[in-house]
Image 1 (cartoon, one colour):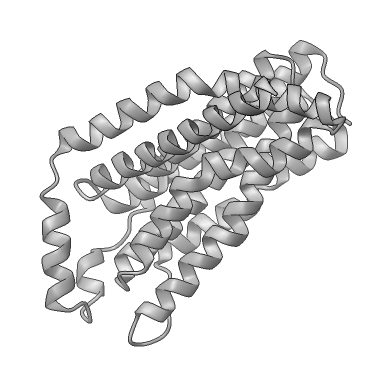
Image 2 (cartoon, one colour):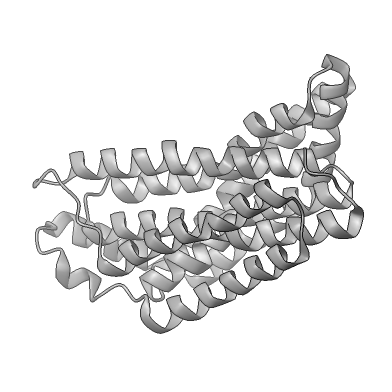
Length: 279
């Protein structure tokens, strides 16, 4: 019974930690270049809870938990989060449609190509060359985004935004930088404190119920780690501003690319070093 209580307790605090990371990333994203902050920094901050789950599980020799958590969260982002972003965004706009900016479309193509990395792992198992390929692809994605994946003069592209929206955005921009940093620090501390106990609880509950831990990880871990991305996407999209919708979309795509490249590469390195067998 203790493991159930501990798991629920840790889960609640991890959801809170994820929300803090999302809030801090959103505040900082309003103060710096939208495409870089949205597609790289905010995406990575929102992925941080899952990355810690992932590495902690691998360090604890629980690769099935790590794989289940990443797979489940990727599916959640590519279905629920993206679907909510587009559906809410289109309903909030007078034109009834959303046009993705060229840089965001390019990110979608990068995501499509990056899927080759996990597919390679499925076909041949854990290999060091796949790990180097994943890390190299992610580094290339960073340089590509910094050099050419800029969102173009976003606010000038959305002339249909009303005065109330503009006033609301100005009020949001007044939020100080220290507030965003404080959210990130608080979220990071909660993640460090509760991620490992949460994983241990899930494994023990799975043993008690005689259920494969990967199934519980597949369903529960994404809820905790992807909560901020989903909430943030809804919050940005409901304003009906083309720029905000593109930031939300870029955030989701950038976070998924991190999983299919960087985390997949790390998984392969751990698989080879620890002798994990692909099942």
